[in-house]
Image (tube, rainbow, N blue to C red; front, side, top):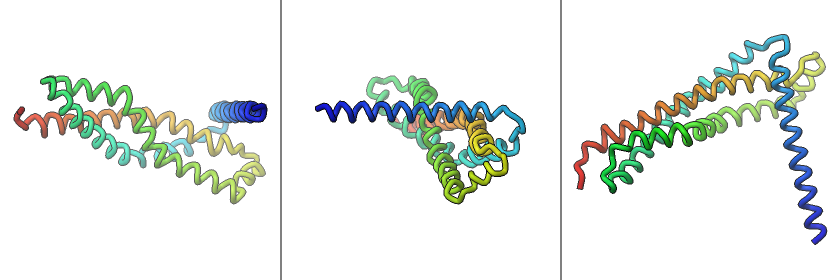
Length: 183
């Protein structure tokens, strides 16, 4: 019993220490983001890789998510003869919940894994140590531009996801299912 409590305490301390290291790393990345020299070229490059190159995945998943929500919502509301509320129900569901979550999943799955693999490859091939030897802070050069680009592109991608998903629900609810006669 005592070893179980000891293991639980060790796990809690290690988890708290790990979260503290991540928080300090994030603070360091924000602090280095605003120190000279500015890395605008890197921010623009990562805006392209995070934002523009993820646009197709976000649009595709948004259209199909909206279509599925429109289809499911239509048949649920049809039972109560309340098809008129489909637009507001889908819009609220997309804007509040699904839009931010699913667009973040799409960008994380596509871009986040690529960035993690790139930085891990740089660590293995000692490119990060080479940055230190050239007096370039790796956090300022590698991490801060990615964080700034993510902070800029994620709200834009979420807004695009929301608009496209609502349009997909419109296509299903108005163009496709409204022409089907009620039973």
